[in-house]
Image (cartoon, rainbow, N blue to C red):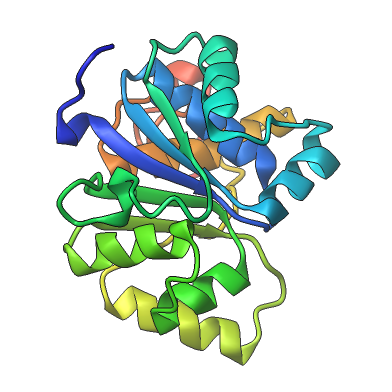
Length: 215
């Protein structure tokens, strides 16, 4: 099993907000880029996956990791999955956790728990670790409209250095399919992580892809 340097590792968490296609596309891209993914999936996220994608993922972390490694052509150990109370996992400690973490999609309940420092499950604890270790945490919420509670929690986290990246794809790349919209958001996440992507051309570099922004 290959060893991955810390800068080749990332924590990806799925919580119970709508947006499963974003998570699946992001996971696929991270694997393709050679990253080791530490995967956390909440119970509510499993409900969303079943509802939006018709997917029933294995319940045990070891089985889930094996299933996803085979599905995405990952190397053995490239995807590691953990249970919600697996406190001895690397992501639970500042000495072992990856420096980068994305919660995609991110529910407002998860936002609130992270903002309050609750750490009642491994997703919340992993996010708490990244914040305290001055790492990079990206939250991809999908909620509309946003209440004052939501906005206050998001602002609190943004002031701590957390990147708030709502699942709000643009249209200037002239999307034709749902995948085009999904790829727009995944490309933005990868750009912020510093992971190379060719899903969507960056603004000002799209002429070769037929983009013709108005003057």
